[in-house]
Image (cartoon, rainbow over all chains, first blue to last red; front, side, top):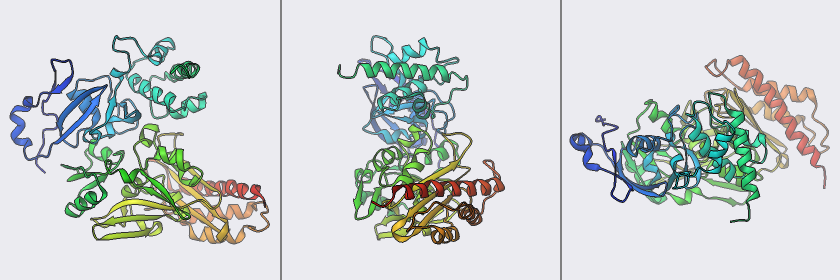
Amino acid sequence: MTAIVRRSGGNPTNAPDGGLCLALSDMGSSEATLSSAIRTETTFTVNGRRVQMELDPRESLLDVLRERLGLTGTKKGCDHGQCGACTVHLDGRRIVSCLTPAVQVNGQAVTTIEGVAAPDGTLHPLQEAFIDNDALQCGYCTPGQVMSGLACIAEGHAGDDDEIREYLSGNLCRCGAYAGILAAVRETARRTDSRVGEG
Amino acid sequence: MDFLRPVTWEQALAYKAERPEATPIQGGTDVMVEINLDKGRPAALLDLNPVAELTRWSTEGTEIRVGAGVTYTRLIAELGPLLPGLAQASRTVGSPQIRNRGTVAGNLGAASPAGDAHPPLLASGAIVEAESVRGTRMIPITEFYTGVKRNALRPDELIRAVRIPAAAGPQYFSKIGTRNAMVIAVCSFAVALHPGERRVGTGIGSAAPTPRRAPEAEEFVAAALDWEGRSPLDPGAARRFGELVAGAAAPIDDVRGRADYRLHSLAVMARRTLGWAWNDYTGRGPA
């Protein structure tokens, strides 16, 4: 198979409207090599913003988020689905972005950790709870923990500590901040529960 | 690498006929591991995600037809009462994130001897609905696994659905791993009671080149159980069942466990799951 330059420029630039768009012309000189490879047009939204790009089918959603769109909040831990650091939401459901080919999310909505806080920077209650409960040490797993914690609560899997532990089992924390993470999710789930009915 | 994006099942079959070397992909949780670690580079990926009909399941007589795109998460949430053994096994697959993407059909396509879905499919007597532009084949699960990571699919065939008899009696799944989540099975076992036929189904995972049944154990225990009187399980018969299950396995020593440990734990899992299933059956009592 012809060699393909996997990460061939194509850095994101800020469009005048503040949206993300891919500067295809940045691919420049590697265009000749790439002509023999099939690149697939893919359109999706990230945190509400529309993205349209030509992608190599091998590119994971994780690599596209970090290296093409500059959204480095989503972390690469293991790159084979074991650590959960790359957890994002796809159409509202949590997935590991490292095992999701970016071309597969065509037409779908991706939410990353950058899309969790309010536009004015106000943190989500779960993010506040992570701070309050000292739920991190080095912080590398934290974006994935928050994305997974949000889903755990939304799925209704935060009923008791055992259930929270089971449904956060796909997110590893090698600093061992599990007690704080559990407390943060428990606390936020209870608050969310008490707000049910307020719309 | 090409990326083929069919929207209908007919298009998917046409692509597969034209490009038999294309790797079908559902959630990608297996295929992408190979790609990310550069263990394999498929000539093409055939994305079955956009084929909406594959995400449905339906009841057809006493059979549940599970489309190739039904995720483990949905199987757990929607099919627990109808397919308890498979739902239990599904709950042990990876993590919630993986279960939101992974499918039983993907497990079958990969045909790893350690795939969690295989033992309950064997215990239930599932049928794999394979299709190509040439037509449909109903492949009994016992004929589906042909070797380590090999299956009976022909190059132009795709899995459209898995047909699984709805549970007619108690079913249990058990799995050995280093923790209670995110583990590839060291070994696993499933049992299904079929009281109407006075039959017991079994499935062994990760303890032979392919997932397999334990036919001798099935025959022995079907004859040993008091189906009519529903008397308690004889401990000696349960132990013998465990030994016969272990006897049907052919494990190896590898990074996840030693062969002798696998044999021992299989015997324990077989004895225990049979006990749980039989307790459920006898506890139900005549109406």
